[in-house]
Length: 180
Image (cartoon, rainbow, N blue to C red; front, side):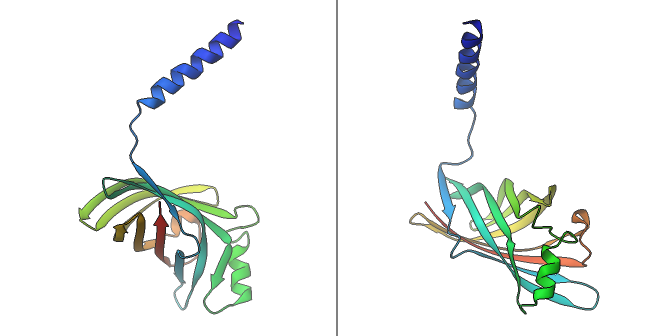
């Protein structure tokens, strides 16, 4: 009886605390994975390759007509090269690079959003890939937020050093469609 009372008291206390915790969004927009896409370009000293990777799921949090946060999951098993080079795709999926057999997904979680204009925001977030979390800052262009729909675009460079990738640089372009 005492254990049951303690469990119920803990549940009630937790519910009370979380009911007063501030939330940073009023609306949740679900990512349209069929329309959204991620393009990438990786370069070395003497060559580069480009391609795509699919967004598996995601949501964008909006409050007062402004993006305030979000979380996204990328399906690394879908990584493709623009040139359809099977050997390169195999290398990118191997333990030398993304190790998709072990780490088939990557996530990006927005930790803060600061608007610099009405439709441009500096976004800080955490990219988790191959089990390692690295900070990623980007500028997002909010191209449309009306009638329960949202289109956001961002291009940014990713420092491959913290991820131990042997490339000079990775440029990423995200085209994100979402709706309530």
